[in-house]
Length: 220
Image (tube, rainbow, N blue to C red):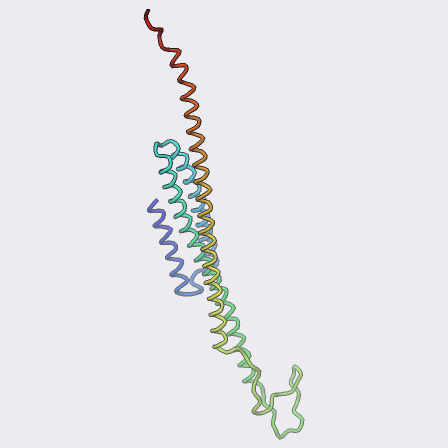
């Protein structure tokens, strides 16, 4: 169990470091592979949890065994959920970076296009029309506004803050869901234990009369 959790922790650390180094360090194909790995590990956890739960009912300290099994499952699923959140955040960062690259490319193209435009002679009474329609910009007239680097940085900061809030909300929802599942399993375990105790008492009571009938009659 410790080895499995260590592997999961190392995988999470690798994902976090990869996204911290570069927004495009992990390719879409790698993201698909990581999600498939997480799904496979989650299925393995469910299989092991069910097997351990069955084994617990064969032991003397049933409650302690069930509680340990629940704690292990909760920790293992929480590790996988953190990895999943890191992958989702990384994908959002990658898409945001692609949008920013597109904005910067358009900004550079617009700036280059404005620099290449001819400027109308102020002494010419009627400026020749532009090929696409409209008049040429006059000398000293400001060029149309294009997105600047400050605006792009502000947009990136807003996107990062939004992603952080989304990740926090996802973590809180996952924590509440895990707590609800744990409580439901504990309740089910208590119900099973009560039924087992009741069945044990009934079996014991049913066996007592037969024991009494089996005793020999006292000697006269």
